[in-house]
Image (cartoon, rainbow over all chains, first blue to last red; front, side, top):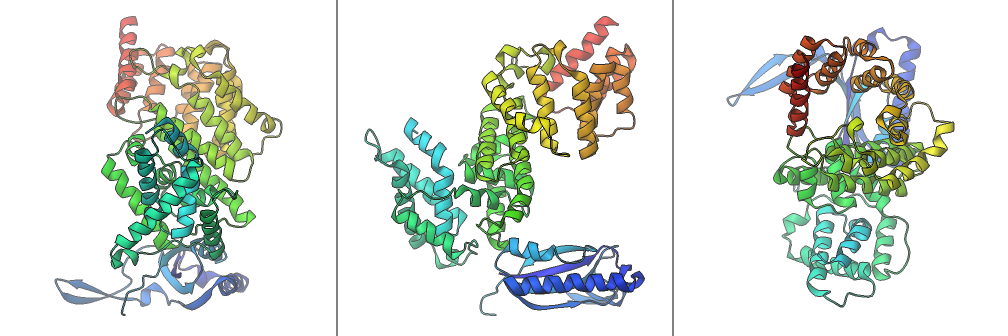
Length: 117
Length: 410
């Protein structure tokens, strides 16, 4: 099954204030996730996102687009990155996600196959 | 349904369904096919049932599943299939070919799938009752006090989510399995409490359905690794359920614990519960809420009369439970125990600053303790507050009676 793993940072500023050792620990945790996914399945993609104040949002109102500054939802928690992975099942997916750094809220969503696309 | 068919349903539904799910990887298809097979059995068995009823049902259900698959539109077949590994599928197929062969308890996979943490606990509890025990959707709806259509929709959503998100029909490794025990326990207990403590309607409890939930706890304990959590949970539900006959008076009114006729408690069930708890009393694993709750229920169960209740011991257990859970409901129960052990003022002191928004229980308890302390005006106001919040007709009558007794005495 293919899943998208959405990483929402509970404290988006945390990285800026982190010590070198704390940053290392975050990277080590991401690597552990990578290794576990590779063991049970495959990492198909994934990226860290720039800070939410770099976001540009398009909203459609009555069929026309309005471009605004900032993320789609103003909230303390912001999307910080994502992975796209192939894993055998949700339990294996959850087990791998448990290895990620604890500063995230993690949402796991299955990818829908759209026929003939 | 005949008695024999009832018995087969009772003993084999979960196992048969698990085998069909393993083979066809679809919950709806497996359920429908098995229901078809039971229907065919009811029609055709008559006075001459087959020698091996579960094997007959399995063979028939399998044929019904194939019929249903043939009849289905291609589009329906495109729906996501459950994740079932090849070996589980093979095992199920072998079992289909030779139903006499003993197999491991397939119900474990079914329990783990239905009581999965990715489902809302209420949905998981309903789905587990439906799939593992075969409780009819009507009855599951009655247990959770929702209309049948609402429950049917909830069950359909849950089935679809399991397939769409890839929850596996599988048994995880020992560590992961151990971690799932508390989740399953919570789901099973929720099924029980739904029948035991309703918040509206004119029935104080639906004992027959609560009995099905007790059976669910038994099955769960049978198939999952043994330990204090599930022993304590089974003891707890047995102790609570053992009071069902004494809990309802001749007029259908609710009878509270101190006023219950203790000869109407099911003493065989109490004995079973106490035996389950015995190994864990000496070295109780720290912070096991079900064990603390069961030990509290056991103190009530062993008291020959209400006056003989060991309230100081119960107050102690509640203090420990409050430390573990931090729950305001536990604090409320602790206040009741402390009031019994040390007097109403000590109980009232524990209610200070407590908040349970929307619940009639806090003002009911406060009213009762104020009445006992002789503070009638405050008690009257608290009864009014409780009456305004209480949706259960039986409990409302009880509260109103307490309030007017107060006025009679004033």
